[in-house]
Image 1 (tube, helix red, strand yellow):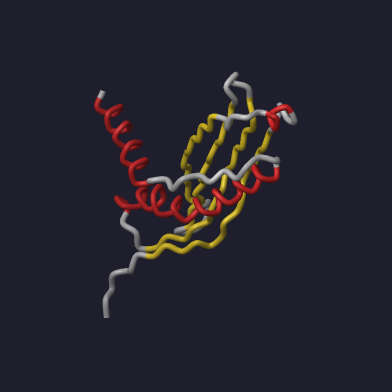
Image 2 (spheres, rainbow, N blue to C red):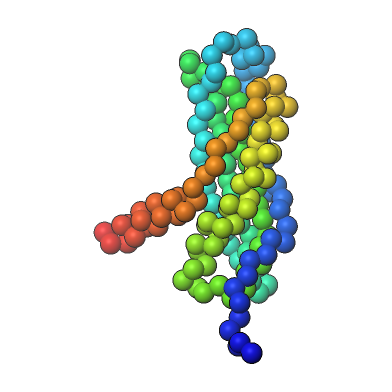
Length: 151
């Protein structure tokens, strides 16, 4: 018998925590010929769920800002797609990697679908967000943190 606990990650629930959609300059924006410039920002937040053992909430926050050539707002989508995850047997030194890489990878398809759905229901063409390299984002984020600590 092996006494070591095997590491596991379980997705318990996926849900929209917050969502905002705005298209302040419609219907004039529907008459424009050129596609808007799209800016996408991504953030990841996570925290343990109080009074539980191994449960974490991970929030994938995505903001999509579309502007025309005159820098007028075409649409704005702000989404916080969250998941409740149960993590067991994951070493402390690897916990942040799981919470900032593995969990957002699970959440991303759900967030992409929600954003695409709201943009399309707003009368605009589909908006398909490209895959996101959460490992590179993790390395970038922690390289900046490490640099700030050294100064």
